[in-house]
Image 1 (tube, rainbow, N blue to C red):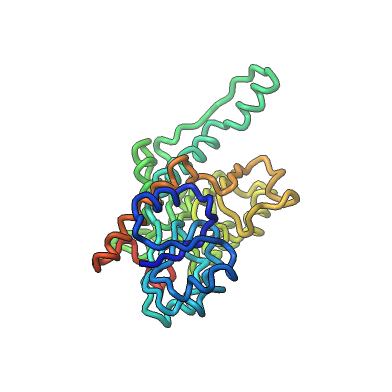
Image 2: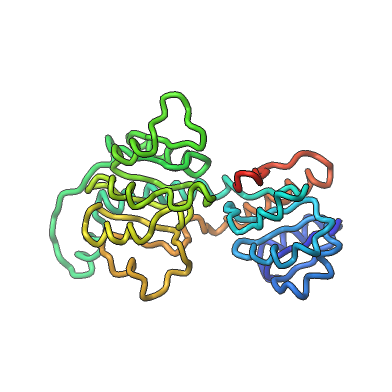
Length: 308
Protein backbone atom coordinates (compact mmCIF):
# COMPACT_ATOMS: atom_id res chain seq x y z
CA UNK A 1 0.00 0.00 0.00
CA UNK A 2 1.17 3.52 -0.83
CA UNK A 3 0.31 6.33 1.54
CA UNK A 4 0.87 9.99 0.74
CA UNK A 5 1.44 11.96 3.96
CA UNK A 6 1.01 15.73 3.78
CA UNK A 7 3.00 16.67 6.87
CA UNK A 8 6.47 17.85 7.85
CA UNK A 9 8.85 14.85 7.91
CA UNK A 10 9.76 15.72 11.51
CA UNK A 11 6.09 15.61 12.65
CA UNK A 12 6.47 13.50 15.80
CA UNK A 13 3.42 11.19 15.41
CA UNK A 14 4.87 9.88 12.14
CA UNK A 15 7.27 7.80 14.22
CA UNK A 16 4.26 5.80 15.41
CA UNK A 17 3.12 5.33 11.81
CA UNK A 18 6.56 4.16 10.69
CA UNK A 19 6.85 1.80 13.64
CA UNK A 20 3.41 0.21 13.48
CA UNK A 21 3.00 0.07 9.69
CA UNK A 22 6.44 -0.88 8.33
CA UNK A 23 4.93 -2.46 5.20
CA UNK A 24 3.18 0.73 4.09
CA UNK A 25 5.14 2.74 1.54
CA UNK A 26 5.26 6.34 2.74
CA UNK A 27 5.83 9.56 0.86
CA UNK A 28 6.04 12.52 3.23
CA UNK A 29 6.34 16.25 2.67
CA UNK A 30 4.71 19.67 2.51
CA UNK A 31 5.90 20.88 -0.91
CA UNK A 32 3.51 20.04 -3.72
CA UNK A 33 6.15 19.77 -6.45
CA UNK A 34 8.14 17.19 -4.55
CA UNK A 35 5.03 15.08 -3.92
CA UNK A 36 3.43 15.03 -7.37
CA UNK A 37 5.06 11.84 -8.68
CA UNK A 38 4.25 9.90 -5.53
CA UNK A 39 0.73 11.35 -5.45
CA UNK A 40 0.05 9.70 -8.79
CA UNK A 41 0.75 6.29 -7.21
CA UNK A 42 -0.94 6.82 -3.84
CA UNK A 43 -3.80 4.67 -2.56
CA UNK A 44 -4.62 6.97 0.35
CA UNK A 45 -3.71 10.37 1.77
CA UNK A 46 -3.06 11.41 5.37
CA UNK A 47 -3.14 15.14 6.15
CA UNK A 48 -1.61 16.72 9.24
CA UNK A 49 -3.41 19.67 10.88
CA UNK A 50 -2.99 22.98 9.02
CA UNK A 51 -1.63 21.44 5.80
CA UNK A 52 -4.90 20.66 4.03
CA UNK A 53 -4.55 23.34 1.35
CA UNK A 54 -1.96 21.19 -0.44
CA UNK A 55 -4.63 18.63 -1.26
CA UNK A 56 -6.17 20.97 -3.85
CA UNK A 57 -2.80 21.47 -5.54
CA UNK A 58 -2.19 17.72 -5.72
CA UNK A 59 -5.72 16.71 -6.69
CA UNK A 60 -5.02 16.25 -10.45
CA UNK A 61 -2.37 13.63 -9.59
CA UNK A 62 -4.47 11.70 -7.05
CA UNK A 63 -6.27 9.58 -9.62
CA UNK A 64 -5.95 6.27 -7.73
CA UNK A 65 -6.67 7.56 -4.22
CA UNK A 66 -9.62 5.87 -2.52
CA UNK A 67 -9.40 7.38 0.94
CA UNK A 68 -8.35 10.70 2.51
CA UNK A 69 -7.97 11.16 6.25
CA UNK A 70 -7.22 14.35 8.16
CA UNK A 71 -5.73 14.35 11.64
CA UNK A 72 -7.74 17.50 12.31
CA UNK A 73 -11.40 17.49 13.28
CA UNK A 74 -12.33 20.41 11.03
CA UNK A 75 -12.58 19.76 7.30
CA UNK A 76 -13.55 23.18 5.94
CA UNK A 77 -10.20 23.40 4.12
CA UNK A 78 -10.93 20.37 1.93
CA UNK A 79 -11.93 20.91 -1.73
CA UNK A 80 -15.46 19.53 -1.43
CA UNK A 81 -16.41 20.76 -4.90
CA UNK A 82 -13.88 18.22 -6.20
CA UNK A 83 -14.49 15.51 -3.60
CA UNK A 84 -18.25 15.43 -4.23
CA UNK A 85 -17.59 14.45 -7.85
CA UNK A 86 -15.40 11.53 -6.79
CA UNK A 87 -15.80 8.20 -5.00
CA UNK A 88 -13.06 9.04 -2.51
CA UNK A 89 -14.03 8.39 1.11
CA UNK A 90 -13.08 11.17 3.53
CA UNK A 91 -12.60 10.66 7.27
CA UNK A 92 -11.52 13.00 10.05
CA UNK A 93 -10.56 13.04 13.72
CA UNK A 94 -13.77 14.42 15.18
CA UNK A 95 -14.39 13.53 18.79
CA UNK A 96 -10.74 13.09 19.68
CA UNK A 97 -10.33 16.67 20.87
CA UNK A 98 -13.75 17.03 22.50
CA UNK A 99 -12.76 16.49 26.12
CA UNK A 100 -10.06 19.15 26.09
CA UNK A 101 -12.39 21.63 24.40
CA UNK A 102 -15.15 20.84 26.88
CA UNK A 103 -12.72 21.60 29.70
CA UNK A 104 -11.78 24.91 28.08
CA UNK A 105 -15.44 25.90 27.90
CA UNK A 106 -15.78 25.36 31.65
CA UNK A 107 -12.51 27.21 32.30
CA UNK A 108 -13.85 30.16 30.31
CA UNK A 109 -17.08 30.21 32.33
CA UNK A 110 -15.11 30.13 35.58
CA UNK A 111 -12.85 32.92 34.29
CA UNK A 112 -15.85 35.23 34.15
CA UNK A 113 -17.84 33.85 37.09
CA UNK A 114 -14.90 34.20 39.48
CA UNK A 115 -13.45 37.30 37.76
CA UNK A 116 -10.04 35.68 37.53
CA UNK A 117 -8.61 38.57 35.52
CA UNK A 118 -9.26 40.84 38.50
CA UNK A 119 -7.75 38.28 40.87
CA UNK A 120 -4.56 38.00 38.78
CA UNK A 121 -4.29 41.78 38.49
CA UNK A 122 -4.71 42.29 42.23
CA UNK A 123 -2.14 39.62 43.00
CA UNK A 124 0.38 41.27 40.67
CA UNK A 125 -0.26 44.59 42.43
CA UNK A 126 -0.20 42.97 45.93
CA UNK A 127 -3.65 44.39 46.55
CA UNK A 128 -6.01 42.75 49.08
CA UNK A 129 -9.42 43.58 47.64
CA UNK A 130 -12.25 41.14 48.49
CA UNK A 131 -15.06 41.09 45.92
CA UNK A 132 -18.24 39.15 45.13
CA UNK A 133 -18.05 36.16 42.78
CA UNK A 134 -20.74 34.07 41.10
CA UNK A 135 -21.69 30.40 41.08
CA UNK A 136 -22.05 28.48 37.84
CA UNK A 137 -24.64 26.29 39.55
CA UNK A 138 -28.09 27.27 38.36
CA UNK A 139 -26.84 29.25 35.36
CA UNK A 140 -27.94 28.41 31.83
CA UNK A 141 -25.53 27.47 29.06
CA UNK A 142 -26.68 27.34 25.47
CA UNK A 143 -24.60 25.01 23.32
CA UNK A 144 -24.86 25.72 19.60
CA UNK A 145 -23.59 22.62 17.86
CA UNK A 146 -24.37 19.67 20.11
CA UNK A 147 -22.05 17.13 18.56
CA UNK A 148 -19.06 15.55 20.25
CA UNK A 149 -17.54 18.83 21.43
CA UNK A 150 -20.86 20.32 22.49
CA UNK A 151 -21.78 17.17 24.41
CA UNK A 152 -18.40 17.19 26.17
CA UNK A 153 -19.01 20.77 27.30
CA UNK A 154 -22.57 19.92 28.26
CA UNK A 155 -21.58 16.96 30.45
CA UNK A 156 -19.14 19.07 32.40
CA UNK A 157 -21.55 21.97 32.75
CA UNK A 158 -24.28 19.59 33.92
CA UNK A 159 -21.96 18.19 36.58
CA UNK A 160 -21.65 21.74 37.94
CA UNK A 161 -25.43 22.07 38.22
CA UNK A 162 -25.92 24.21 35.13
CA UNK A 163 -28.98 24.06 32.89
CA UNK A 164 -28.17 22.92 29.32
CA UNK A 165 -29.96 24.22 26.22
CA UNK A 166 -28.67 22.32 23.16
CA UNK A 167 -28.94 23.35 19.52
CA UNK A 168 -28.50 20.24 17.38
CA UNK A 169 -27.90 19.80 13.68
CA UNK A 170 -31.31 18.15 13.49
CA UNK A 171 -33.72 19.44 16.11
CA UNK A 172 -35.32 16.86 18.34
CA UNK A 173 -38.81 17.07 19.82
CA UNK A 174 -38.81 19.70 22.53
CA UNK A 175 -35.53 21.32 21.49
CA UNK A 176 -35.55 25.12 21.70
CA UNK A 177 -34.73 27.20 18.63
CA UNK A 178 -31.33 28.83 18.33
CA UNK A 179 -32.88 32.25 18.95
CA UNK A 180 -34.65 31.04 22.09
CA UNK A 181 -31.35 29.59 23.33
CA UNK A 182 -29.51 32.86 22.75
CA UNK A 183 -32.19 34.83 24.59
CA UNK A 184 -32.24 32.50 27.62
CA UNK A 185 -28.52 31.75 28.10
CA UNK A 186 -25.99 33.15 30.55
CA UNK A 187 -23.19 31.46 28.57
CA UNK A 188 -23.30 30.56 24.89
CA UNK A 189 -20.87 27.94 23.60
CA UNK A 190 -20.28 27.85 19.84
CA UNK A 191 -19.05 24.39 18.82
CA UNK A 192 -20.25 24.03 15.24
CA UNK A 193 -18.11 23.09 12.25
CA UNK A 194 -17.68 25.69 9.53
CA UNK A 195 -19.93 25.09 6.52
CA UNK A 196 -21.87 27.44 4.23
CA UNK A 197 -24.88 27.08 6.55
CA UNK A 198 -22.93 27.91 9.72
CA UNK A 199 -20.88 30.80 8.34
CA UNK A 200 -21.60 33.71 10.72
CA UNK A 201 -24.40 31.70 12.27
CA UNK A 202 -23.86 33.94 15.29
CA UNK A 203 -24.86 37.01 13.33
CA UNK A 204 -25.01 40.65 14.37
CA UNK A 205 -28.72 40.26 15.10
CA UNK A 206 -28.11 37.26 17.33
CA UNK A 207 -25.22 38.92 19.16
CA UNK A 208 -27.45 41.93 19.76
CA UNK A 209 -30.11 39.55 21.16
CA UNK A 210 -27.74 38.19 23.85
CA UNK A 211 -28.36 39.15 27.45
CA UNK A 212 -26.11 42.03 28.58
CA UNK A 213 -24.66 39.74 31.29
CA UNK A 214 -24.02 36.85 28.87
CA UNK A 215 -20.66 35.49 27.70
CA UNK A 216 -19.93 34.05 24.26
CA UNK A 217 -17.45 31.14 24.11
CA UNK A 218 -16.23 29.98 20.70
CA UNK A 219 -14.46 26.60 20.52
CA UNK A 220 -15.67 25.70 17.03
CA UNK A 221 -14.54 27.86 14.11
CA UNK A 222 -13.92 31.60 14.03
CA UNK A 223 -16.03 32.35 10.99
CA UNK A 224 -19.19 30.97 12.63
CA UNK A 225 -19.32 34.30 14.52
CA UNK A 226 -19.65 37.77 12.99
CA UNK A 227 -16.38 39.03 14.46
CA UNK A 228 -16.97 42.71 13.69
CA UNK A 229 -20.35 42.61 15.37
CA UNK A 230 -18.86 40.82 18.38
CA UNK A 231 -16.11 43.43 18.75
CA UNK A 232 -18.69 46.19 18.59
CA UNK A 233 -20.80 44.54 21.30
CA UNK A 234 -17.76 43.99 23.52
CA UNK A 235 -16.45 47.54 23.13
CA UNK A 236 -19.80 49.03 24.09
CA UNK A 237 -20.39 46.52 26.92
CA UNK A 238 -23.63 45.26 25.39
CA UNK A 239 -22.55 41.78 26.47
CA UNK A 240 -20.43 40.76 29.42
CA UNK A 241 -17.59 39.20 27.50
CA UNK A 242 -16.20 36.54 25.21
CA UNK A 243 -13.72 33.67 25.42
CA UNK A 244 -12.31 32.81 22.02
CA UNK A 245 -10.08 29.95 20.94
CA UNK A 246 -10.72 30.45 17.22
CA UNK A 247 -10.81 33.48 14.93
CA UNK A 248 -11.76 34.39 11.38
CA UNK A 249 -8.09 34.92 10.51
CA UNK A 250 -5.29 33.14 12.32
CA UNK A 251 -2.85 33.93 13.73
CA UNK A 252 -4.53 36.99 15.23
CA UNK A 253 -2.43 40.00 14.10
CA UNK A 254 -0.84 42.18 16.81
CA UNK A 255 -2.98 45.18 15.86
CA UNK A 256 -6.27 43.26 15.98
CA UNK A 257 -8.94 45.15 17.98
CA UNK A 258 -9.69 42.13 20.17
CA UNK A 259 -6.30 42.20 21.93
CA UNK A 260 -6.78 45.29 24.13
CA UNK A 261 -10.33 44.48 25.28
CA UNK A 262 -10.42 43.62 28.98
CA UNK A 263 -13.65 41.61 28.65
CA UNK A 264 -12.13 39.06 26.25
CA UNK A 265 -10.16 35.90 26.99
CA UNK A 266 -7.97 35.00 24.00
CA UNK A 267 -6.56 31.51 23.40
CA UNK A 268 -4.28 31.08 20.35
CA UNK A 269 -6.23 28.07 19.02
CA UNK A 270 -4.62 25.83 21.64
CA UNK A 271 -7.61 24.75 23.73
CA UNK A 272 -7.36 21.23 22.29
CA UNK A 273 -3.58 21.07 21.98
CA UNK A 274 -2.74 18.66 24.78
CA UNK A 275 0.57 16.83 25.03
CA UNK A 276 -1.01 13.68 23.58
CA UNK A 277 -3.54 15.14 21.14
CA UNK A 278 -1.59 14.38 17.96
CA UNK A 279 -0.62 10.92 19.22
CA UNK A 280 -4.27 10.11 19.92
CA UNK A 281 -5.24 11.31 16.46
CA UNK A 282 -2.52 9.16 14.89
CA UNK A 283 -3.65 6.11 16.86
CA UNK A 284 -7.18 6.60 15.56
CA UNK A 285 -5.83 6.85 12.01
CA UNK A 286 -3.85 3.62 12.43
CA UNK A 287 -7.00 1.80 13.49
CA UNK A 288 -8.80 3.17 10.44
CA UNK A 289 -5.83 2.20 8.26
CA UNK A 290 -6.14 -1.41 9.41
CA UNK A 291 -9.83 -1.26 8.53
CA UNK A 292 -8.99 0.12 5.08
CA UNK A 293 -6.47 -2.61 4.42
CA UNK A 294 -9.00 -5.24 5.50
CA UNK A 295 -11.73 -3.80 3.30
CA UNK A 296 -13.88 -2.89 6.31
CA UNK A 297 -16.01 0.23 6.78
CA UNK A 298 -14.16 3.25 8.13
CA UNK A 299 -14.91 5.29 11.25
CA UNK A 300 -15.66 9.03 11.21
CA UNK A 301 -16.72 9.20 7.57
CA UNK A 302 -17.35 12.82 6.53
CA UNK A 303 -20.61 13.66 4.78
CA UNK A 304 -19.25 15.27 1.60
CA UNK A 305 -22.65 16.74 0.80
CA UNK A 306 -22.90 18.54 4.14
CA UNK A 307 -19.20 19.35 4.32
CA UNK A 308 -18.54 17.85 7.77
